[in-house]
Length: 240
Length: 199
Image (cartoon, rainbow over all chains, first blue to last red; front, side, top):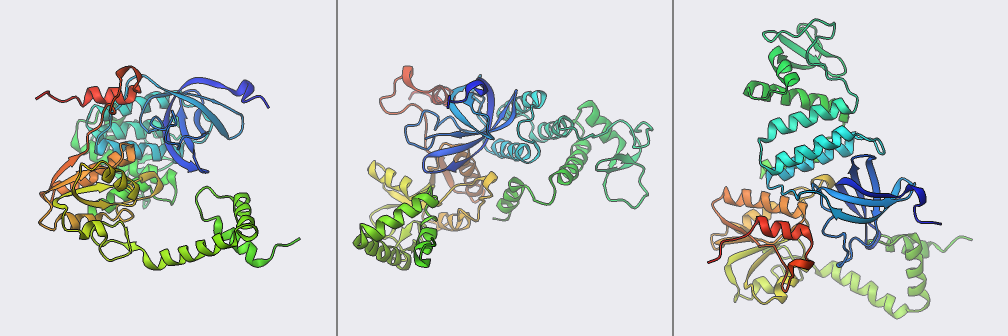
């Protein structure tokens, strides 16, 4: 069998989302590629001490990957460093793990999301440059839901009336903002928060706080019952 | 044809080893039973003995037959230094350099958020207690320079600094005898970013 044949892809921009051991010396690598979406590949021999790929299969680094194969698990042939090394430190690292966990949980395999890839790459650059983390995360969370096709209406109520900055609203998953009063569960927030988010303006601390509550509720809704490991880990660290 | 039950049990038991699937397990079982029954007996006894004898050192968390391991018990090590490593093999490598004479703490892993390995699994509570014995003056973080190792080092350092303990991290950069021409660009970029003043 010709290795790969037409399914060979050369020098594709990717990020490693996660790796796990496979057999004695190999790794299964979860890649987020710009043009092919989430792709899983076997890196043969990547756990051998002298493997050329060993030190490169690290999350948060822009890489160029060459793989082949048509099955769900591709064969990863080679890796090169992409443009610009990113150094994530301390808490930014944990934010990166959080983003990767979200992508692994929400992004279906083999579904290209070029815009999301570029946004993710930009987000890692912000995290590496120690930009404020909270707005950076909120932007990517929102972008991720929108790119994946979940509507997050911010400027109009469910029935179509424009959001007023002075009013209070109740935000419901799958639907959007409604006037409070009905007995439904959702996140209570001000119209200003929604309009700020629509304008991508997170300078108001109240916006930052309410947008976090909103995104947490929406993500929990789309993630289902299984909690995020990264969040649990931060809770456990707090308890020490 | 059905295998004898005890053969099936053996194959099933061998599969607990990392990287051993049903086929390798069967091959190992046949080998042990057919070609090397002495070896099999030794293996069985060694396993049994190790399980009964070996626990964790109460001081460094490494594998040990005694409550406190040899290295921790010698008394001629510098108890003011505590070096944190991920695995016993890392400790062995450091020992082979003959440059470090302090004490150790072996995490037996690293924080790995996406695998659900958290502070409990790597015994951070014990490390915190160990580092606060009022003899330790400096904790040296020698976890791997992988993203998980870095995250582990970061959180340990935050926890220790909050308790007023001095923390350092082993350096990284070009390897011994490293030529810039041949070093990978990731290492080189880090070496450039983390350059130090010449004294």
